[in-house]
Length: 128
Image 1 (tube, rainbow, N blue to C red):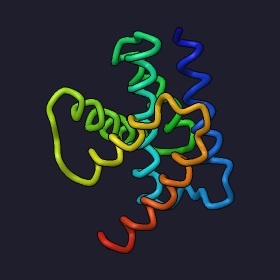
Image 2 (cartoon, rainbow, N blue to C red):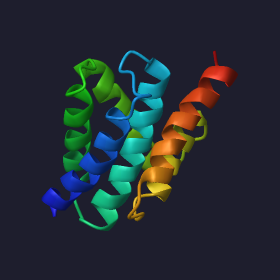
Image 3 (cartoon, rainbow, N blue to C red):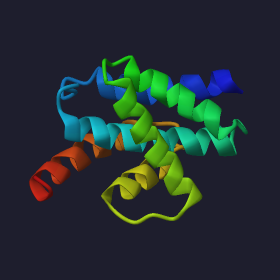
Image 4 (cartoon, rainbow, N blue to C red):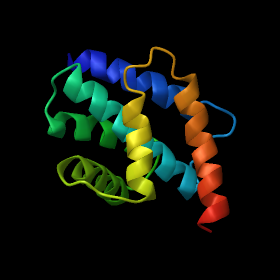
């Protein structure tokens, strides 16, 4: 089942990072993507593939680090994202995680991909 999880994550990962709007140097976009990707992966990984959280965390960390992001930063992002599933949390970041999570069963990731870019723009305008 781990292979199915990796394929599912890769589909969204590739759709976002190969889009012409992707910019690894855009921290807001990276965070919006990372949080949404985590929610998406956690939903699919836990509910469909029955993976342990540690396996899901490792997969997401490896994917985000592969973009050139700092390991310490990525681990902090993933730790925070995981904590929102352990203790209910409010705020923008947990909303991004929830958005990703709400799309984990979608066969077409176009809507989620567009939401990631749209939400990054909204965050830039409202939280400069």
